[in-house]
Length: 103
Image (cartoon, rainbow, N blue to C red; front, top):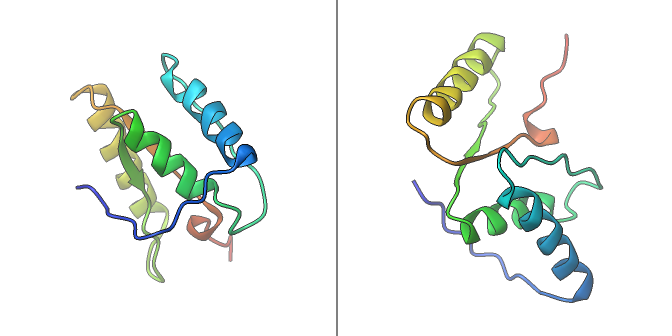
């Protein structure tokens, strides 16, 4: 499904540079990147925007209080099946909100 974002996106030089970097990486065969920065800095929004520009589906884990390692494994199997068997081009987004504690 396609998620609509009602987020005002201000494009200034620094943001445009990040968009171009992400775009350059995602256009490469098997392109992937790790974006590191402060929470709320726009990494996820820019990744979703560039993915949309390139016609990629977006897969983002929706962790909840009962989400466990088995759920993660099942989600990962599902996304790998979509990519490997169906040939779907997917942007897999895993942000700090999806990381589970070890406790």
